[in-house]
Length: 435
Image (spheres, rainbow, N blue to C red):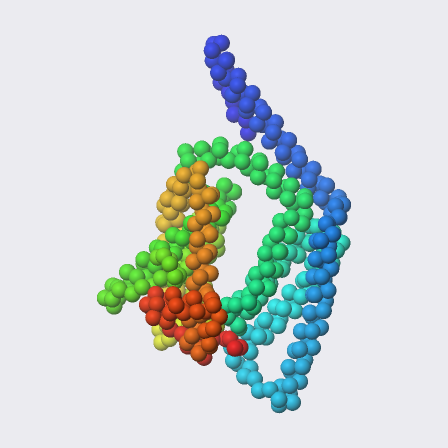
């Protein structure tokens, strides 16, 4: 909305105000042109989704993907039928309650769903249905992520993850570039956002609203900048709270870090992000509602993390067996209450002050600084996963002949890992790996 410009009282005032009025008028005209272009883009996309033919290399990839998907489904079904026949004939003995068998069954379901979606995705690419292909790419992303996590749990960190990683990278690239209308829309929206960004920033600073959800539906804007720094602060603060709690409880200092380098506990970082995302629209609700929601979300998250660490690496980092409302020793009523209190304090008290703190990062460097820190955090996470996988292999008695295995055995041996991750113990018999 254009602001009312005061009427100049003199020629000098007019000389000063005139450029401001001209610049403001030009900005308004540019905004109107961009909004009109956005509307035309949406209208043209609805009228004709297949007007622009995809490049030959993309359609060739689509054909290969379609063939791969169509051929994979019968192969999986054949192998599944063959395995069932082997079991029925008594040639193979399985334990239906064993974790590897359960994970393998889930992986089969995921692979069939992934193959079916890949076949449809390939058809959309062949027919140059850009928007539909982009939507199928988005649908394939969670299936690819699930395949990668199951592969990590069954086979460990190795070449088995190369396929899901490459597929995810291709899907991300295609989802961005498939539809020129979507790409143009993003570019136009970005330009429109940049035009309003400076004014919005000034208004937010004056109203102490920087980083807030301007739609009013939630408290915080769930953009990458806010989410990343919430994760980092959650990692550090969560580690500090757990360390102090353990020291007060047993009068002993114990390193509770969860990554190779730095004072980070990714469990608390992920927990902070999940609580923020799930409770963002509940911040005005009754504290009892927030407490109960936090307790359920935190308990479910803690249960999943404990299960996945055990299934992937045979790691037990905590065991609440025997405690009040213990669920498999992975979570308990006591710690669900803690999660409820943490979530309530996080949403009602901590988040407002934390939002002001992280948005004190200078405006000029915030995105470049965030990108660099995110890259360093990603390296730390990947190196930690590889170190845990090599630690598991050494405990399991797997020969460490590969150069990467020898590197980790030399720099992150069993003594180093046990000292760094003092709460973790590895028992290969508890893992879900098939080898």
